Length: 481
Image 1 (tube, rainbow, N blue to C red):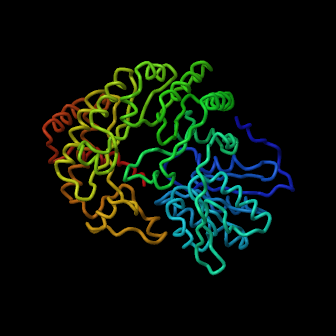
Image 2 (cartoon, rainbow, N blue to C red):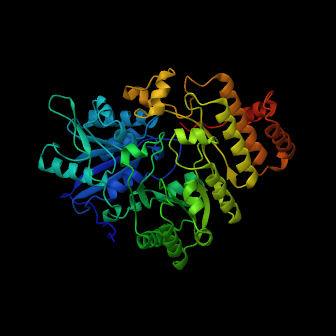
Image 3 (cartoon, one colour):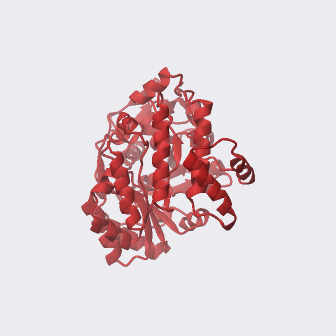
């Protein structure tokens, strides 16, 4: 098991390394840059992690921290966070022209060379960043080239991107424990409105969903922390921060039932007074033994995310989800029996998706919502990443894929594609509103509205949505892009 990192004070002999997490509208703890920062040898590096979401002047905070720094690492998600990443990187470059600026995270993992369109960025890191970033720092300290440094792409002497071979996917049990003292943990608790710790117990995913970036980034590989390490780390973190909920940020937490049971045993045996939430596939839920689900519940399981994606088996097969609708309902029944809340996300409006497919998703969502008041069925529009057959279909239907970093910065996850008709979008938006009003636990003043919403859903009657217009005017929904 990896020892926790040291926390010795700053030393002139150590090189300063600054990490930056760009602004976004959610307050999940920045586990990506935290993992890379924690893996660095603290006897050699003085590490600072700045989160733009917590700063009044993010660029100013980064520039102030960079004095004498060896490197700035920026974690970048596709969409609006790119704007902030560019702004901060340019400010850092202007203040320190010789500073090496490295981008990592999901977007540079998918568009390694494209990110180097931005002149302030010198290097991008692909997939797991712990070992790659550490090697980049070693080479910078020694004045060596990045030629052959696996897992990264850099700008060559002629200005063109040089993409090195990918780094072999590593067992994360060999990585250092995440050092949450690099984060102002209490501020995240305040912003979330609950004492919830974000934690990741595995990396990667074995599956091949055609709409997901995971197969491309991690090559359909998966590795998890040993259950004893998870238990030990969570117990130590609980004594440090006294959280009451753990949000496992794993792509597929329930990959192996015996491992899930072992982690539940760790939580029970250590008597940790916490609840927890995680991700599960429908086929994993169907196979999960009843006694393991019961043990998970005793250990604090409160909520799962089970991606349905479509109520049409034909569409599910097309997007290579590799589950059956029967498995969705089997998992839902199991969760309802054990009192576990579930979020069942759907993706709608794939290019050339039929009206029957869309209607099937609506019907499945209604059936799931009726099974438990603790079930949610959010609907999202399909957004195409390059490199998949579905995206090729989208391009044929008029979709213009982003080519520049600026275009990717304006990429809106909640905007429909050009192949989505106004009529179809109107149906989806109205159903999203009415199914929530119909099946959520109502506020005292909403009982009459709920009865009307249930009637609308039962009849599929969404015309003249006066209630929707009035409630949206009183309480506009925050866009999350």
